[in-house]
Length: 305
Image: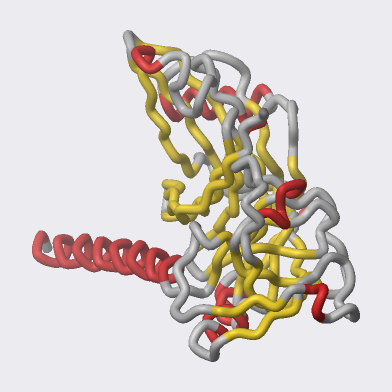
């Protein structure tokens, strides 16, 4: 009997490990990248310092082709670089899929102030895409994907929440799960799924000694417990504990959900993490009773002048 129990335990451990590895592989196999949007949401730029490509492309100035409009440049490129870029045919912004088309290389002007913001879009070196048919309203960092990504990741409806406190029942359940009081009221990040009954929230627990704890938690409507990501901190690092100049304050308002996906292994969240000096984009993956953060190495430096 003991041998049978051990075998079952090992089997489920294998499944869990395989699931983690498959999710990690999904994020590393080149079926997505990130781009900066321009101010009117019609162009996207994969910044050259955030992505490596094989081959080089040659830019052709727009003045040589007066038919090019909307500040667009026309490009001639080598076939070595083109296949790596043309596969990104869709962009995802605010839970919506947009059709995009690769244009070519944009060369830096040397006149930018270093801030990777939409108003500075045409000053940077990178790889240019155009958004077909529709404009992206209020876009900054945008996810670009290929068809294989969309086959594995199905978009789920969600509603962003800002400065909305979690209910008393949610707060009580979270405190009970951690056996620890809250420093301040937990805040909702978004609701999602059928009838928006599933919840993603952020909370800061009371400091114990020098140990601080921020948590992102997901509560599904049919579950009695939370799936959580623990983000520990220390009072020794104040004023910058979780992000630059946060003064030791962990807020749900810093996390903006750009998309929610349903995958074979659970839910996946595309997060833009807003700080005083920039935006960091990453995925949160559901893995059993935990949320797992998968870094994408994409950041935008946006510090005010």
